[in-house]
Length: 247
Image (cartoon, rainbow, N blue to C red):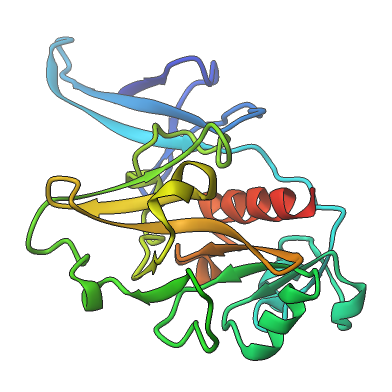
């Protein structure tokens, strides 16, 4: 068996006792999408079979110099090397999974909140123009017509090695919730990921930012919480949203 990764590794491949292909890849400064090409060669040098596998490589993410208060995500954020504080008054950004009246008041007073709205009970307060609902509840499940999810990599998520579509790199992160209520006039400014079903006639946001009183929040429905430690796309998305909120 022979193989090569274009533009990534000059090191030869080895095959472990378990039949795993092992190779060393150099460090990358940005996310990289490439192909592993494999060939099975006979003793006479003829190619008996060939295949290719998409691979993704990501740079090591440096710890953010932000103080975060995250009552529901503290352990996952600490595992990522983030600084988590117990007192919300000392935090630069709050990370929550459930948006309550108390966090809405915090926003109105000028706070900055990353709302990871991943569950059916994520919204427990009222906003004039933001509503988080289940995809199945509003006919956006995608099991009755073709669907397409997208991200705006020119604004955020530029280190994710994908085009503007949400593809295999986002495996396990596909949202079960969507964001409704963003006025079409504000979509070009405030929405950074979305979904549509059918012929672009039924759409919703998946990542959006909103001013709330004197505060600022980003709402994200991608399923990041359970995957932050092991999924580089989840970690990259979280970092980018926190950096944007901190500016």
